[in-house]
Amino acid sequence: MAERIQARYRIETPLPIEQAAASLAGEQSSGTFVNVPGETNELKERFGARLESTHSLEPSAEPALPGARGKKADRYNRAEVVVSWPTENVGTNLPTLVSTLQGNLYELSQFSGLKLLDIDLPASFAGAFRGPKFGIEGTRRLTGVADRPMIGTIIKPSIGLTPEYTANLVDQLAAAGIDFVKDDELMANPPSSPFKVRVEKVMAVVNRHADKTGKRVMVAFNITGEVDEMLANHDLVVKAGGTCVMISLNSVGLSAVKKIADHAAVPIHGHRNGWGMMNRHPWLGIEFPAYQTLWRLAGVDQLHVNGIANKFWEEDDSVVRSMAACRRSTCNLRPILPVVSSGQWGGQAPETYRRTQTTDLLYLAGGGILAHPMGPAAGVLALRQAWEAAVAGVPLDQYARTRPELQKTIEKFGGKSQ
Image (cartoon, rainbow, N blue to C red; front, side, top):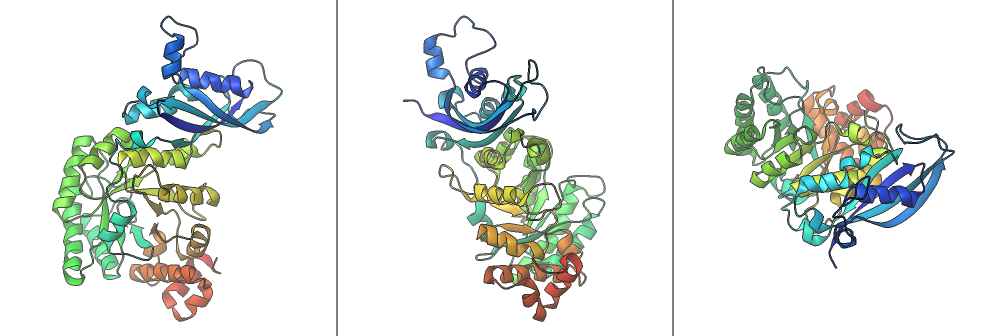
């Protein structure tokens, strides 16, 4: 029997669930709006999508989205459904996989809500992709951090800084023992901070500290751009002694990211800016477990997951699920390193650890480090102290009594500890 790719969806429809799901399966495989010559029973049996299961949810009196055809229904049926496709429909073509799992189905008038929740891939399909070259273990090896969260920051202000100013800031952070520094997603190759010059200035600082201390700060330089430009900039970073590059995933697409990842000699830091347009509505788009599977196939090593009590819209439960999805086993592909960010400071560390019970993460704080009252170096130390307290189960305010860096953080950002 042919192996099959399975996808789980949350759907809403004015039609009976099985009827609506059948329209999804037909549209995304061998069918169209009318029977056509050539669509034989044999063809449908071999290549057609199949409804595997349904799980009914509470119906709604109103549609989640506009556009369902026909007169207004008395109720809109809701369910989670699993649909499958034979792997030979896709081959090993990642863009075709996306077209199959998402594609036109969001346009179908039979639905007033539809969201891709997760993907289950046969080992034979996933085995055709290299996946992450580094992941969690490789990033730990390159940063020299074995048994705690990797602590990092984002260069702020996001834009407008010169390469010299940026290098000076990295100098302060490296002296403080930071593990990771990244460009903001808005900083790529502007006239005010040309990429080549920024790499030259920053890596001179990183290399000097590495020669002195043995610790090489991982800097994720933002190479986002056209494919040939990204390849050249990756090589520039590696030649300068850099150990990471960053790509705005949704801006360049799966094929471009896979091209860079297949070529890369350093980890790919995946920034998911634009994620909200794919996920923010509960009845439209894609959930993170499915999203990370696609990027893991493409070869991303580190992926943003937002953070507990973040500055954006995402709920904590969603963040926790995202972290678990990055770390789960997927067809022998290396786990992706969850990158926790968005309005983070030491105050979220206890709840993050309580809910995930892991330190396999990269914990990024922009303002939480750079705006520390005692300076960026104290900001780095305060974050480490917060995580020490979190893992030990000691309340932050108690742990801060003999640690002024943590105490000042609590006073500035959060009052009482979480």
